[in-house]
Length: 193
Image 1 (cartoon, one colour):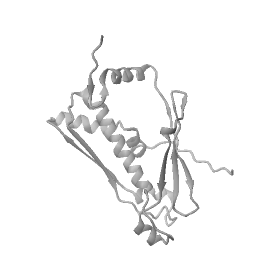
Image 2 (cartoon, one colour):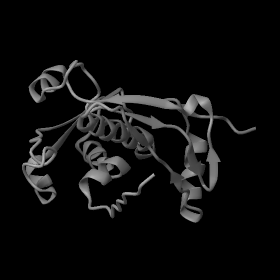
Image 3 (cartoon, one colour):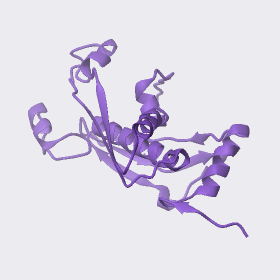
Image 4 (cartoon, helix red, strand yellow):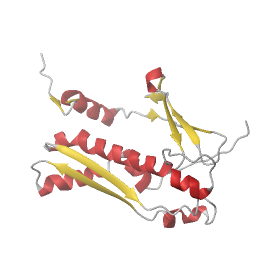
């Protein structure tokens, strides 16, 4: 009988078997998010639910999430919203997705590199000029409206400089970080329902 080694909530044997299987048979995840306008400018509800795993469609009630998007009360007041409120702001949610994925990228791979994490915190931040959103500037100006996204990884543990460099390298293996850092092909369509 094989002994199971669990580190930081992961069965290391299964993790390594999954990693090895990706070399021969890459897995594709089919993901989607659907935004519905609420009839109030600047507010939408986003639904996340079913996904595809290696060609299999998975849809179960516990995978259905609803996220109310908008802005902060003070910004909604400044814009002129009637009934200002506080909601999840889309850029912050994108930053939170980068932070979550960076955390996962590091934690999923640290043990394999002999890194014993005692704690991990990732902060992702940026300054945003909303001029493109309000059509004051054109879409080609996006990078000047959000010129720099910064991530800071704080790790606890007795780590060497080499291990810190490995963690820095693992940052670039995060898929969400890659969506932000590297150019991706993006296709947009508008259809009449």
